[in-house]
Amino acid sequence: MTSAKLLKKIRDHESLTTQDQRSLIWALSWPAIMAQISTTIMQLIDMGMVGRLGTNASAAIGLVTSTTWLVNGVSNGVTFGFSVQTSQAIGARDYKKAASLCRQGLIAIGLFSLPLAALMALLSFQIPVWLGGETIILRDAGLYLLVYSLTIPFYMLNTWAMNMLQATGDTKIPGIMQVMMCLLDVTFNALFIFQLKLGVMGAAMGTSASVICISLFLTGWIFIKNDFLKQKASWRFHSHSVRSAFRIGGPISIEQFITGTAYIAMTRIVSSLGTLSIAAHSFAITAESLCYMPAFGFASAASALIGQCIGANRIELSRQMAWRITRLTVLMMTTCGAFMFIFSRQLIGMLSPDPEVIAIGSNLLKMEAFAEPLYGASIAIIGILRGKGDTLWPACLNFVSIWCVRITLSWLLSIPYGLYGVWMAMVFELNVRGLLFILRQRKAFPPKHAAASI
Image 1 (spheres, helix red, strand yellow):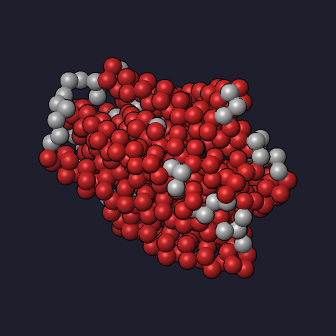
Image 2 (image 1 turned 30 degrees about the horizontal axis):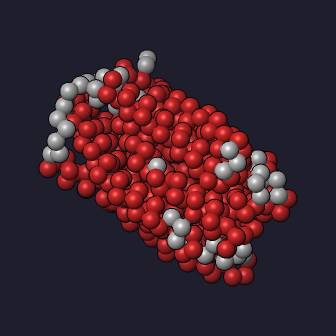
Image 3 (image 1 turned 60 degrees about the vertical axis):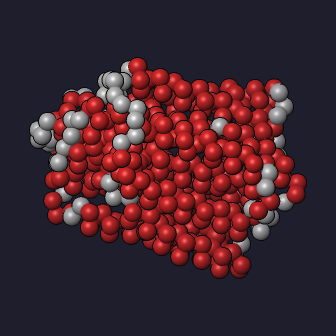
């Protein structure tokens, strides 16, 4: 049975067997997983191509990566504020409201992204200085950040389009298009980095060009092809929708701000350890992200599934789905952690030819492998809670875990153990975070009603 028919069974209050639930989770998760992996591969491409230009070029991108993550993360609150409501409206079979929420979300990202892009462009050369980068990499870091800043509206457009399509249960088209973005990134990078010899700035231009192309395509698909969202609807803001968007999206932006500023604080700690540490840290983070992207795929599917269950008032089904998704994510992330441990040198070797960077980076990945199962659980549970509209608790738990545990330990352990001390703190904190989120899920979805098997 297709995912569309299974989703319709949720809206029509028909029963779903255990096999139906598994099929639906996998059907929605796999395209989302491929989308997340392709996005990470795009980062790997950037880092790998730039890595051929030398350690300084890699360090320049690594220095500002945490800043781009912060901006993208905070911006997510705007899109999720409307996409979660869209998913719940579809679950309630109020398709006209869903289409209107989609349009309100598009206007909201326009109003938010344009001033943000202008501000980031003005600060693009100052931020690398604030982050403590060495003089030799400041110019390249600033150029990379400038190009990224000017493309922020399209990054947000791409996120909005993916979230809206996933809210309808369509993860296939976003998944395919993110793979296409990866292929375009290879092509544009080859042109800008090597043919036009633009170096680090060329990497940013290649990525930006691919994001622009795919975001415009997905936007067109929403208004021309998607059965739920293409129908005529109001473009006006509605007070109730806006209030709900702030209630849902506000904590998400705060949560992402907490996480993003923590990454910047981590970058500041690492930058004090020298350019080699920045490069090894950046490559290890990028390589690790390839392994935990499946969890984000499950989280995307979870937001759509739980949102439609809640909208349809299928409370018991939402409990079953929540725990089944969490268990599947932990199983997948355990496998990914083992893969990362075994192939750590190969993963770093794809990004840098520098023997010192490979040696340090591979050791970091082996350490991090032991955090993947519980880290994956926390990612999936965030998606589950977002579908329910519960976004405040994730922000609170992330603050406690990241700032009170990770940053404090990173600062203390970096003194005697250097970069390895920073990653020891990270591994410990990710396991703590996973346990905290599991406890929260037990409160939101008491497991006694959940299905006993995966």
